[in-house]
Amino acid sequence: MPTFGTCRIPYWCEDLEELLQCPVCFERPESPVKQCERGHHICNVCKDLITECPLCKSRFSNARSYLAEELSIKLDDIKLSLLHPMHSLNNRGRNSVGSQTETNVVIAKNGSKITKRAPPEAPKGKFPCRIGTCSNCTSDNMYQQVWEMEYYKNVKYDLAIRVAEMGLFFMHIKIDDNGDLFGVVQIVGTNYIGKEFNYELKIMSSQRISIFKDKVCSCVTSPMSLFENIDCLSINHKDMTRMIAGSDTFTCIMILTRLP
Image 1 (cartoon, rainbow, N blue to C red):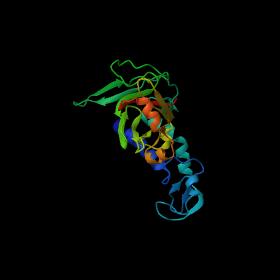
Image 2: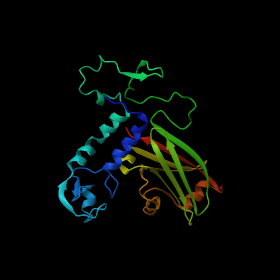
Image 3: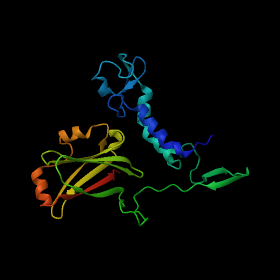
């Protein structure tokens, strides 16, 4: 059996996710998945909103893409199997998992074969961080970061935060011409991936605090549309003025949590 390098595995998972995405809403389609006359699939919700394929402009029929449906159902298991070779999903078909020893054969420079035992599979559950020098992570699969920001009208803070084992996130803080503050957190990925995470934004001073909690949404959606629909953190000018109490700065805390 050929051996593949692990450096490409995360990209294979991303490629699989992108191949299955609906070309209109970029979400993973749910059954039934429809397809156009040339075989491009689309989710059932978007199919009812348009009359022709956004990729080739051909018409839709009542044909279903059974391959896309099956892959969509099994995609999470496929990704888990690729990312974690020691997972129990990869033990299907073996006679006895407990009686076998996982090994990896490495070819040395001199041509000799060296057999190395693979590391044990991590058990399920949550365990505290033991690094000791990490100030941003917690023991409950969370990430936290704190900023000191200046409060002025017509100001935007757009920050990119890459979190190990979570992904790339954007935090947008906007103060409009009236002095109203808005804030939202997005992920570089689909809304399906974003649903794996909750975020919490705290705007605070020494005496007051305002908190907003929600699921992380995809960066495909414009943050301006979220601000306009108030689907985000929102603090009006009067409340901000009372919060900072004569100061020109405030504290912003972002907390990311991976859902169980």
